[in-house]
Length: 96
Image 1 (cartoon, rainbow, N blue to C red):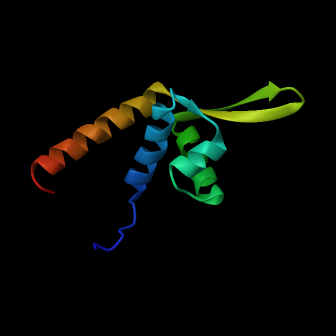
Image 2 (image 1 turned 120 degrees about the vertical axis):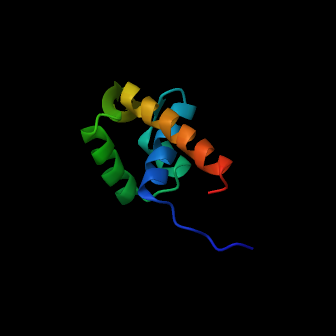
């Protein structure tokens, strides 16, 4: 059985953005935490960075008396996912 390897920053960003894309472009933060297999603290840090880089938007909405959040992927985030997939296909074509 091969040893588990840690994900790089790029892979983590890709996993986060891909999880949002796979849920129709929006996802609740808790669901994203489970889908991307990250702790709350790590996800919060990544979401903050991705928001600053305009790859995601975190929007609040009112549901009854509760304020909830939803994470939305932006066009820039979708572009990253597409380009990262191309890069992975390219490197795997050469066995890297």
